Amino acid sequence: MKHAISCCLLGLGLTAAASAAYADTTLRLGHLWPAQSAVNQDLIEAWAKQVKEDSDGALEVEIYPSQTLSKANSAYEGVVNGVADITVTLQGYTAGRFPLSEIVQLPGVSASAPQGACILQSLYEDDELGDEYADSHPLFLFTTGPAPLHTRDTEVQTPEDLEGLRIRTPSEVSSDMLESMGADPVGMPAPDIYTSMQRGVIDGLSLPWEAMKVFQVNELASYHLDIPYYTGALMAVMNRDAYEALSPEARKAIDANSGMRWAEKAGEVFYGLDTQGKEQAREQGDTIHSVEDPLNDPQWSGPLKRGTERYLERLEERGIDDAQAVYEKALSLRDGKCAL
Image 1 (cartoon, rainbow, N blue to C red):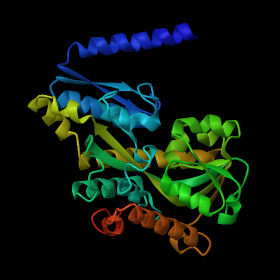
Image 2: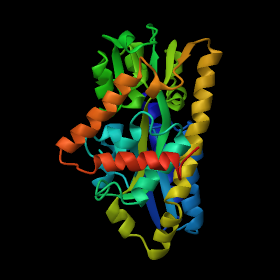
Image 3: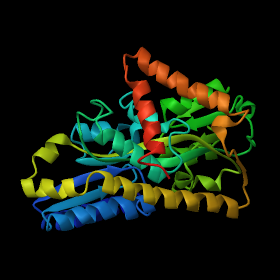
Image 4: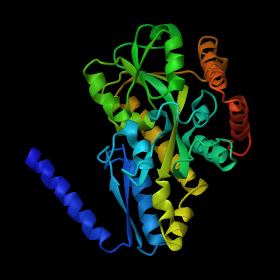
């Protein structure tokens, strides 16, 4: 097996080297999704192909899926430090680094991946996120769709049903809300969920329908509470020095594939996968409960609203005085420019 893996890696390296020989600059892009996933093929590979075309072949993007270049929880720092030139990852994996960006994750801010992408990219373009990305060069920002709660053996319909359950969480925002409802939040990147749930390390998780399909977790979950518990914030960012070292023509190709156009493309890809993930759960006969209006639901509104208030208060305690203003701006984008 080791020999086979080594051969595969050698083949990957030779293929990349042969391709790079025809490019003036080769950029290494690492991410966490499997190579065969639609996120890799329909979003990341599509972006790399467009950059190559727009640079007339001067730029080649080598893609390293499935955490082969850096682990998910160190991907952003890997780009800042030059381990990778580009990464696509979640802000929540770099704890405390993107507190204003993570406001878009709060319940009720976004109802879909396209809407969330519009809100987060607009906040960045409107200079509402301070210096959170000062040590990198952002390409585009986007979000997952809302993340329901999924469990293996325990049916969850009310907050009380979460008491004592070990629930995987991706971020500070969702951890607080889980803890307030008596659950035991367990932090881990998405690629680690399947094995952890299979071995009983966790009883359930909060994850978008997209990721339930991509990471095959639908195979293990039997119960789903379709409630917009949180929305995952994501980013495609580039090493600042690597960007500035490019020729003006090459930078132009990167710039042409940055901003709202690709944020919207990402939102579309994730929306399609959300639809497929939910349909997959239905087809395998899982139990799915829906909370239609959770922020006004007599059982769920309290915990969700308290979680939002607690998060904003904690940011203010940390000296982030504009947290409430950014939250209100996100809501205004939801109801205005980014309305569904």
